[in-house]
Length: 555
Image 1: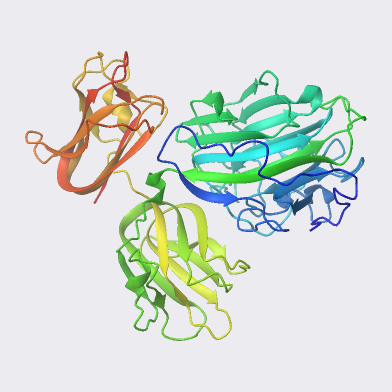
Image 2: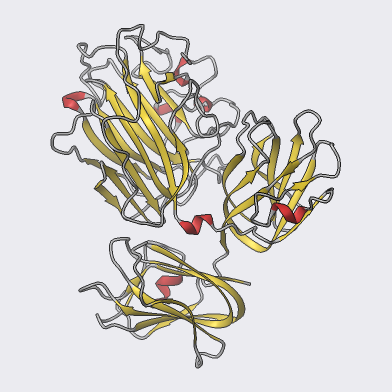
């Protein structure tokens, strides 16, 4: 299918091979706990609107501008972004380069912020519908791609914040950091750059690196990977780490795939090479997004559920973990709602709804509340066109209650779904509480509960059995904890104990035979206590005990 109504690759005499060839699909980094969350193999003849929006930040440009409209097609199992011919996409407001790209999300009036005004690129912000709102936070991401580009061209895979904190009155945001997973210039066979921009985000840094590997050619198929964790990032090429950072965006972000051309020899990707054949293209074989198991804890499981109406298929059946049961409304009306009480506030990262089959289109919205009275929409599928049985929602919010409102049902059907899952973590009750340790150096014990992944506690020696302890200030009903080490390259063995009186201790998580090198390790348990202690029983060779954060969950 020719999506952009321009000349197809075949018509222009370029042979495009089917996707999923030449090299084996790469696995995520050495971590057996990664779980596949999103996979798009670009099958069929149209783009998957659950994950992609076929525009390039249309809110930057009035709808009459060609600049935001990509040229692309989905065929033979790949997505092909392209510059089809010389002079394509020229627009008087953006005359030094053209772009053909897609975004995973679009937010109305999406601005750069105070550090990067629209005037620097002569862009005019414009109203544009919110769409394609797949805006992930953390995980491992991977694409397999190749490109036909030359001097004056470059391709990019990058993220930038959704700016959920944008203040419409002050026109300010702190959530607009940018990570260029790669920017590959067409000259010299492909100059490989990895860049980060802080813009208005105080937690980010401005860094630029040329990491072109020996023998690299952008025209060949390569597997590109991006590991994004709290406080750290790694970029991979064909399974090998080629760049690391000790900071990262801490908010959900837009994912972009794009290619650019400039005929201006003074532009940073120049000089323009007129000998490079058209159409120029950026071909993507697949896109994958992995998460860690901690991201998959369904915190709605077996929690109290209610609904505006029901029949024998009660509200509880949509939170029982069984896709063979379901909630059904008691009538065929529109705007039937179903709701779950999580028992306390949680830091939410998203949710997932499982319908009865993949035959019908359901239109709905997801709302959250802290008091069961005031509701905020965090996911709007009231204009949904997808028939997917399982539909995933990515957002960041703090709430106790989550509600699904089905605004339109397929003809003659009553509202029903088999499961509604909610993902996230409880509020960290250890943050900024009093912490002590058997020993420490300049990296003191309080740094493991300051809420910052970039700081850490370190023992004052390299001995085994160094311990660290937090006083929650009063007794809590504990549901679990989470420890974040400084990296995911070393193996730590440890145990976690709970006490009501700081004298008598009970082990609630025994990792003394641990085999996981995961940077963030999660522990689920049920206990009552005021004090928690981490004892590291065995350290990696030559390492002193250290970790950056210890989080505690409970009520």
